[in-house]
Length: 244
Ligand code: IPE
Ligand code: IPE
Ligand code: MG
Image (cartoon, rainbow, N blue to C red; front, side, top):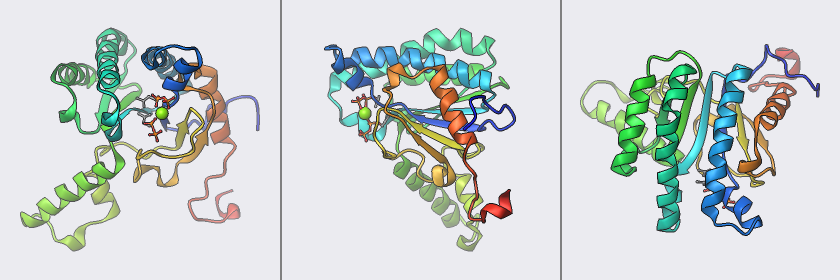
């Protein structure tokens, strides 16, 4: 693997499962919420680093449908951090040409969080730089079921025949419609599982798992992951000779 990043082969879409905040705090004898707070600093650093590398889309798994099962006080702290992150980053996102999007069941978020999220999405909608896509109250299975419901509804309304359903048509009903699939999927924190993240979209993503806990993950760690990606041969079912 070469030490330098190949600027011509940067993954267009990087998706990250930001895991390990709680353990980072516990290792220091601190409450889990402190880990989430420092994790926000990693988010800020990684968004900038992704922009500098030329990544077009950065999807961050910030809160899963399963995370609602956590103790209410931790959920409250996470929602509070999300709200203050959005409020404090709005100016920077506007001046750095960042376009914010979100995937997930937005309607499940507390009203004030949803309001600021929608405001930042609207105010950055015209930006043409990196797309920062936050997965909030997101679950891959829920997303697929929601798409199936939407497609079934259109069939019932007589808008289309079931035989007309293709992969592309179905994908156009996922939360990620209009976004290319992730090329590189990173998980920090040592676990090697997807935890219900981008189940459909990650079908051909390169997977990169590292033990580094999310609050310790910074620009150089993203660059290392990108170099790992650049060392892979993406065959998409073909032989190595065919894609060389
Ligand atoms: C990731 O860190 C943040 C969220 C899931 C919201 P965790 O809070 O899962 O940290 P660990 O896995 O318990 O260390
Ligand atoms: C996945 O992390 C969800 C996010 C990073 C938002 P979890 O910490 O919730 O995953 P599991 O439950 O350990 O698989
Ligand atoms: Mg975790």
